[in-house]
Length: 259
Image (cartoon, rainbow, N blue to C red; front, side, top):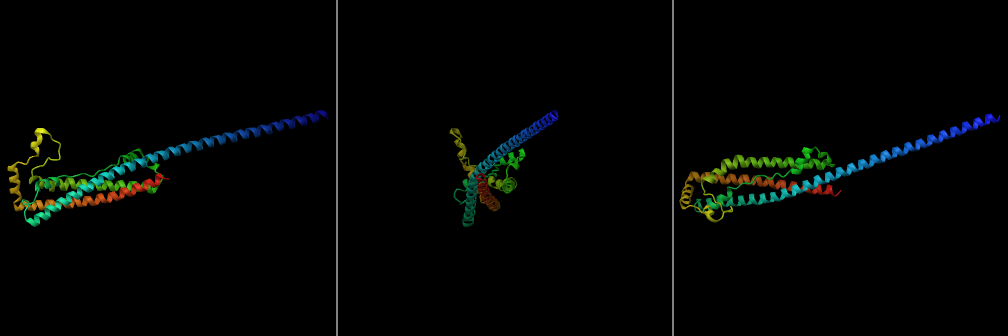
């Protein structure tokens, strides 16, 4: 009888130890799982923070690109406006005096109209985003689409302006101006013996004057001036639109960066 009781007691103790062992092992497994989940959470959190930092870096740099582009847009505004003002004044004076030779400072005015400025496409950060395939870093899909739309519009404006300069201005307007004036180099930084480049030769002045008295040359010049006004006015409208678009995009980016 005693031996039987001892066996039962030993079996009970073994069973109790086994239960304790399973409880301890289960506890260890739970702790390991919690540790793994915590490590994954921290890793994901760090990865998200890194992505957010990259997103902020790209957005900040896009803003800087836009700010610089705005400054060049404003310079273009002034350039186009001055071109239009001078070109219109030449037409007003011509129709009033019925002569180009009687217009004051005709040579420097036409020299000024010889100038042209290409579209300032400043898209370094945007191009890098596309090339690196990291556009998905920008969480806001609406903002992402706005950025893409802006640079597509900017590229379209660049194509219009540069195409007009290459195919209309330099092919149709510039040759007319260039054939009726002596180039003025006052804006260039020459010194000493090079001052001869600032002078207008009397024989050449007389020649250009005689050319301007011919009716066919007057017609060609009037048309060239009108084309110049049309080109600059159209380009000015494009620049004004891009100024509004760039300012709006900067405000949207700033709102995203404040989050």
